[in-house]
Amino acid sequence: MKRLIVHGAHGRMGRRICALGADDPRFEIVAEIDRDNASEMDAATCPVCDVVIDFSTPQGTERVVRFAAERGVACLVGTTGLSPENLETVDDAARSTAVMIAPNTSLGVAVMSHLAAEATRLLDDEFDIDLVESHHAGKRDAPSGTALRLVEAIRCAGTEVPADRVHAIRAGDIVGEHSLHFSGAGERIEIMHAATSRDVFARGALRAAAWLVGRPPGRYVIEHALGLA
Image 1 (tube, rainbow, N blue to C red):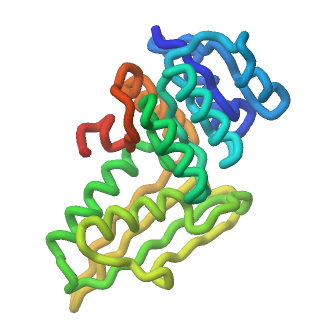
Image 2 (image 1 turned 180 degrees about the vertical axis):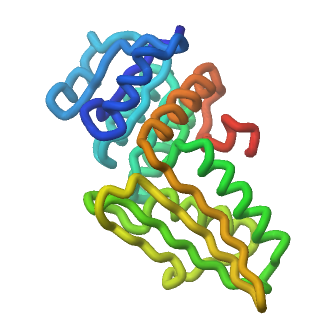
Image 3 (image 1 turned 120 degrees about the horizontal axis):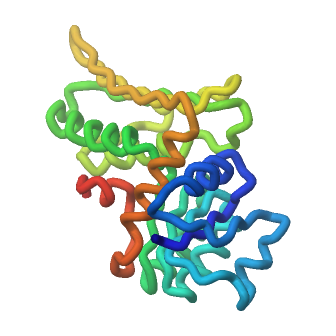
């Protein structure tokens, strides 16, 4: 049984990870950390753990990855909107422990990213590419971390997606939808993923965190947990 700390435990995602993690035989949740008890993350009395799952803020993520590096425990970061400076801190931590950056922990989105790269390679530059992503009205970052990840997958496959072809919608209570459109002469291919419950992301985070425990130091992505990277 892996000892788990959930950081950002009172947020939308943190609550679902705690709820599902409590019934997951792979884990024992040893601490639930949020703003009201964030100091416990730095205290010498913080419980011994094997892995930390972080869904908080960019500032909170910096604190968590430093903690993980000092303790030598695995860390899954699901927080989005990380700046280049935040990612430098992550890279520093990854020299000492296993760190996974997962702006979207849905296993389906990981597969979508893989399919997007394959479609880009096969279609070359004969198709225009547009990405439409939709989230609830309260989501702050736009484009979403998932959208940026899909754009990066396409770029690594050899094609740039201009910023004006990435379209963000913030409305209502949409959990998360991403749609890639490959448009050519007389035909169009669409790859879409729609999440209808945050439990999709919570289950994926728990699966990836279980995989991450015991891995050598380095920076990982969720595709590693699925054998796609």
